[in-house]
Length: 280
Image (cartoon, rainbow, N blue to C red; front, side, top):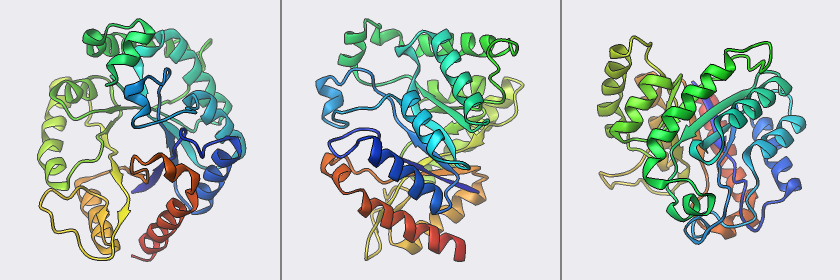
C-alpha cells in the first residue's frame, strides 16, 4: 500500500521556498504521492478554512514536479466545475507529460457557495456540471496525438450517494475524506457493486485520512482514521490495507492557518509515521 501526503498550498506561511521544502521533505521521507488542494477565489467562506495566499494547484504541482524526481503528484481535489473542461484536460495532460507520467487527478464538485457565485458558476448544478465535464475530459484525452495525456488516473472525492455513482462511472480511484474505518468498511462494498452495474472494474480505494498523533489512545467511538496514538494509526493502516486500499493520503492540516508558519511540526509527524510504518 502506497502512502501520500496532502501538502498545504495556502496560508500565511506558504511561499515557493516552503512548497519546495515540503516537496523535498516528503519525497525524502519515502512517501509515494504529494497532493494539493484547489480554490480559485478566496471568498470569505473559503478564507475561514484555507486563507490566502492560495497557490493554483496546476502551477504548484508544476513547481513541485521540477523540484523532485520520483514522487507522484496530484490534486485533492480539483473542483471540476470551476474551469472549462477542455482547459482542465489540457493542463492535466501537459502536467502529466512534463512530469514523466506522475499525475493523479483527484476531482470533486466543490462546496463554497460564495466562490461559485464569484466565478459565475451555478452552485445548484455543480454535480451535473462535474459529470458533464468529466465526460468531455475523457473524450479529449482520447486524442493522444494532441493531448498526449498518457495514463492519468482520476480519483473521485466525496462520500454522498451521488459521489459514489460518479466514482463508479468515471473513477479509477475513490478518494473519500476524513472517514472512519467502520464507515469505509460498510460503504466500500456498495461502491464495488455500483461499479459492477456500470460494467466497470472496482476503483482503487485511496482515502485521505487525518494525521493527529496523540500520547494516549482516542477512545471516542466516532474516531476518524489517522487520529490517535501511533499504534492506533498503524492499526488503521493495517485495516485499510486489509480492505484493499491502494493508497492512503495523510492530511496534517488541522484548519489553523498558523500551522503553515511552522511546517516542521507536520514534518516530524510524517517522519514518525514513515519510520514506524517501514518497521511495522
